[in-house]
Amino acid sequence: MSALSRMTGSEARLFLREPVGAFFALAFPAILILVLGNAIPAFSEPSADLDGELPINLYLPVVLALAIGTVTMTSLLGVLATYRERGVLRRLATTPVKPSALITAQLGVNVAALLIGSALMMLTAVLAFGSRGPENWPALLVAYLLGAAAMTGVALLIAALAPNSRASAGIGTLVYFPMLFFAGVWTPGPMMPEGARQVADFTPLGAASQAMQAAWSGDWPQPLHLAVTAAYAAVTCALAVRLFRWQ
Amino acid sequence: MAVIEVNGLTKRYGDRTVVNGLSFTVAEGEIFGILGENGAGKTTTVECIAGLRTPDSGSITVLGLDARRDHEKLRGLVGVQLQESQLQDRLRVGEAMQLYASFYPHPADWRELLASVGLTEHVDKPYAKLSGGQKQRLSIALALVGNPRVAILDELTTGLDPRARREIWKLIRAIRDRGVTVLLVTHFMDEAERLCDRLAVLVDGRLAALDTPAGLVAGVGDVDGYRANLEDAFLALTAASPLDSRAGA
Image (cartoon, rainbow over all chains, first blue to last red; front, side):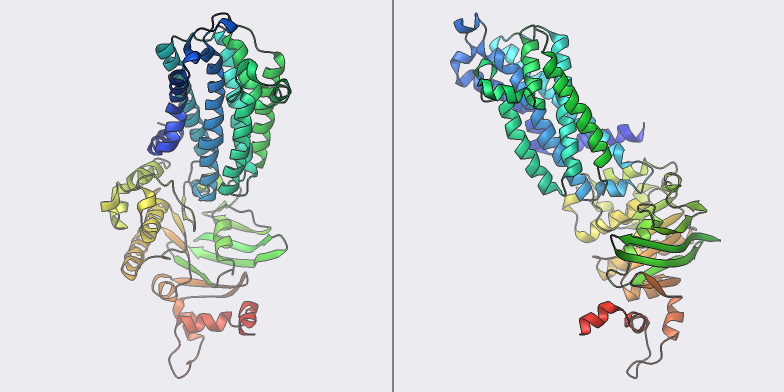
């Protein structure tokens, strides 16, 4: 077994030992859907305004965006900043294994947690409310992965620029809540005001959310939204690789 | 044979020169101590030797390899214990040892090593629950788990009680007896005197003296009617430092 796979196993164990982080990444999206569907009865009744569509179905791609934002801005970002601050990366730099292996292991663990949390959420919606899945699976996967890559890049960049873990957590929070707003967490689908939507088009999570909403209803996402998420992913990752300090 | 050769090492942070033209060699199987006041450049020196920092000028070879250029190769041959380098809070002692052992081609028996630093009963304890001294002992064990040919140990026994310090000294002598060369940073005089074969005393980033502990003491006459010890010798060497004159003013 390679050092990287052993390290990934070890980081996965540590991830599960952190109950709050594991809860928000794995269970929270599903629980949110359950709570919304049960608390607001109209959410899970076919709506005449939406041609007989369940309103909750409009919310599922938004919750996927929320899951992406939560894992990248809290779980991943928190770990990266603390590992540098506490000298975990510095110690690894003295062994035959590079500190970048630990970052790779963390990325792997967080991506896996995100995928599991998203799958649980969709399964819950189908089983509890009879929701339908996305009509355009390939488009949804593309939009989801691009959105996850863009937000991962943003997390890496914040970790690279922030002087310490407190600053990094603060910046993470300052990015997290506006991102959720532009993703439509409070104003899903057609409820988002037009002005806000124009800004959302150019935010990584807002663009990803709209691309996923289009895919859910069977369309292909607007090229603008895919381009915006791809550009964020490319630029933030490239900058983070250049700027990241290992100690 | 010289295992570590430092030649004209100079390191600056901004316009502050932290290490200034430092040269010394460490022989195979030697326990070599670096002694100095806070800010004398001890940690920067060992970080350069460990290949973690690039010197501004001068050269460093370890086992005949360039400390910075051949860092990749040296990482498997040199065990390093750094100050203020922690582990993940929820990582358990045994898991850490097993994980780090897996990084090296010919690791030591990690259970045996854990026993020699007195941590066997804490094998299942998470890192965050360890006391300061236990963390320090784990850190030393991790530096030795790869069966290194050279061990670099910064602030070896800081935070340990007297009994634990003596246990660590015994361990360091035992690994030296297996042929490992040990470079350690300390600010404890008794540790330097009992453990080190030779000492380099740093003052403001320069080499103020390089000798055996006995040789350093012999250079100082009686102090206040008592026979001088290593601390007297150290104080005599560092007395001229600007840090002291400021403090005395």
